[in-house]
Length: 394
Ligand code: PLP
Image 1: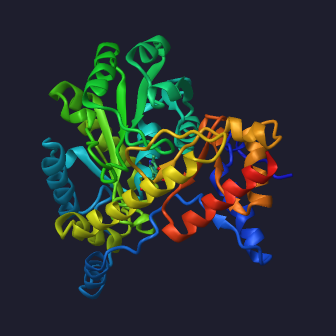
Image 2 (image 1 turned 180 degrees about the vertical axis):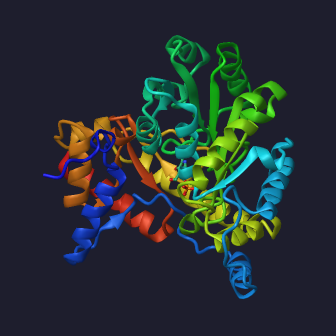
């Protein structure tokens, strides 16, 4: 056996990828599997973005850019923050990264020492704990209770803070729950973070996908003190359907951003130049395509949420954002003779040919995650299959 580094041995493989791999294998065997595991919009990147990227290539913009990103893209991001959040950043408070995932990775690398704790509310996005561990940090979990829309309270936050705590992660709207924190809730959490002097890592990647009367609020826009204490993580992957382009960014304290930039300069160097030109167009061009995608997601959400919650043993809070449903299926699993939700998920794949992700991978074993970033037709077919499976096996 090859001797690998300890840090790699501690990594938990992604549950999302495991299910997707199994579904792909079944598809290759000719089985008609519907995959609801996707973490990316099913639309192509808007044309004007593709054209801007193409033009930049023809124009010879094919060389290294500054490690922290093109000045023009930083300006576009600063413009976005002014417009959407009403807050002002300087260029040295922004770093453009190879996707939001890489912004988070670099952030933990530069703020954590061995044994430092990062508070991660459950259910969580699968990469947070792994990235904290890769930086020799320790994930500390706090349960966002389903009865509180999967959100944590300031009391819960305060309870787990120790002298080792460096940061708390807030992801609103949330993957996997689709829930949003209100301004008042954020203020209350922020008050604790300020008093205890811990970083707030605010992952706002689903900012643009918020439905109905709900409104996205960034904790950084609530006061100058909170802005100082917060590192915002965002990117164009979900908002502009650009997952493959790998453009994300972090905004916040200039010293942290400089350290992240130094780290990038010795690892990835700049994010792909062409993708950066595309991202400039994403922020400076028409936002009409973003609105259209959002409309499609909202329509699907309304239809599928209703169908899903009419299945016996399935309950589901109505998500306010992102493109996931996170139903509680404990009862449905019991009804169909399964000891736990993981087994129910396996049965759904093998017998109903619908691939969903078990909540256990997000620290929430009573739930499953379904993505509605797929056509309405397939979504309706998938929910009908789940309903059939539960109906005939209960
Ligand atoms: N944060 C959350 C909550 C996500 O769901 C994702 C993508 O799945 C990311 C960050 C990473 O996005 P990117 O594609 O920009 O790396």
